[in-house]
Image (cartoon, rainbow, N blue to C red; front, side):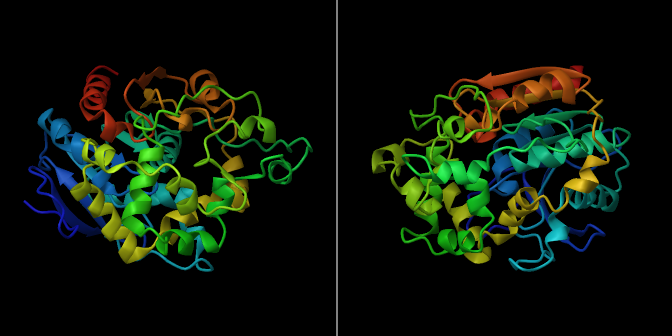
Length: 373
């Protein structure tokens, strides 16, 4: 069996496929297990800066549990074709409702009317959450990783307050929020043209957000204020004058640390680096622009007050600041956004890349959840 990423290490039991999703994409997806009448579908949705390849460690164990496991390169990523790579291109194609439509189209092409579970990590968790909220008739269960879902935005006007970005820039140590940096025209070129090279940039980025970086000691923040947000590590709230490659370069792991990184050895990191060197980062960055511009909030406000009503769990690393980067979201997910919330699992020995850092424990949680929810 082979996968479409050139020079990827052999991934026994995983193969690449391509299909037309009926929504403008020729989707590349990784597959484990066969499509058979008694083998339910499980969908795995990746985040940024990742690929379908991010699920390589859990796909075969899930397939061995009796599932047909499918992990696509989502719009803007990897080997999937048909997405707009331009900063000034079709931003609307990256809005969340269209991302859910991408997933539904993939399922339709594969011949599935329902999925046993939709599982998302990071930005993929956003798509999984909205899929579960909008189509409980299609998705039977939902697992979210590393990015809590606080529910749809409200139609109620926001109370006026200080511009947090102005306040961040005015701090004694001037700062800026990474999502708004990622929404600038310069961000793609900063990362694509990183002085240290894409491979070294991604090594530092993955390390900095993992449990291997001992500075990751997350805790809840009190409010969406500059003083509170400034408590976040610099990969989330950056120094004002630095790019992301410059930010993470300060925490570049040593050669010994790289050699000891069993969850992301150099040959596996090279798969990510090759794809981002080929495509750049703009496709994934468009997802951030949809969020920060607020351009598509109105269509999401239509669903204000709706909840995810299918069984839902949350899984993340105990060292993952993503759990708390949006103040209140972790609590809102558990108490308001999900009517059948079945538990939050924060795994020791994992940071943001939980399904890679603690693959065996994540697989066990998912298998148990699907079997018993």
